[in-house]
Length: 289
View 1 (cartoon, rainbow, N blue to C red):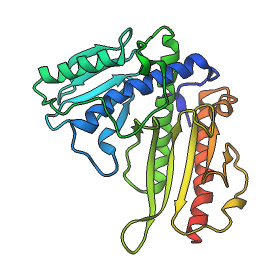
View 2 (view 1 turned 180 degrees about the vertical axis):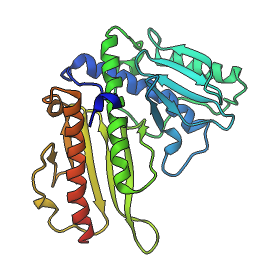
View 3 (view 1 turned 180 degrees about the horizontal axis):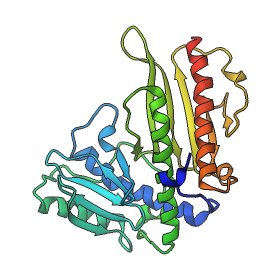
View 4 (view 1 turned 135 degrees about the vertical axis):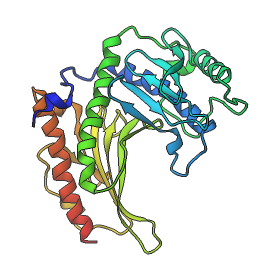
């Protein structure tokens, strides 16, 4: 497969503190879209009103439409926040560089008000917490190391690319989305339902940012069953990545392992093989329940 035509961005930079800080700033900036989703869009049980989609051409995270049709988006490479109309024309641009979170929120609220959006109940409060960053204490967003922001945008492009290619294996129409709480790019697939029509087995795929389990970006493959699965501790080793059982029901493929492959084709194929092999093994176990 020629992944050059599929726009896989070659990963060649180790995950370091500069790239980590840019990622954290992007996570903080994405919360402006979540604020809009939480307070200006009808809430859904799965919280999908706060999620967003990565758009390839512009490196933007695009929020869900407001009842008025406006949408808020964030360009990852330069932290530009935009309010788009129904035709995706920008009606307001807010550059975050050099501004505090409080200042940006004020500009966003005023921009929405100027466009006729009722912002009476619009606040910067959310129902979850994200890891603390000095921006929370009043520091300004900073694009000092812009290449680090571009690198993180490459992570998002690669993730959507490969996950879009994996999703059809489940024969379910599921869009790859970015969730503002954990800032993962992923999707959740119901494999089977119980007699009540609720999910009884599921599989999750995605790209996660560093957390308490893995200290670098990583692709994940998780599974769940309401009934215990015999033999899940005995899953054979993966060609790429590793099972995290029994501490966690799933497998991970670390950024550093992907970087050992030296071409875009090889990197793409490694991630795809991680999913293809892992999903096949999980599906066999789930069918035994």
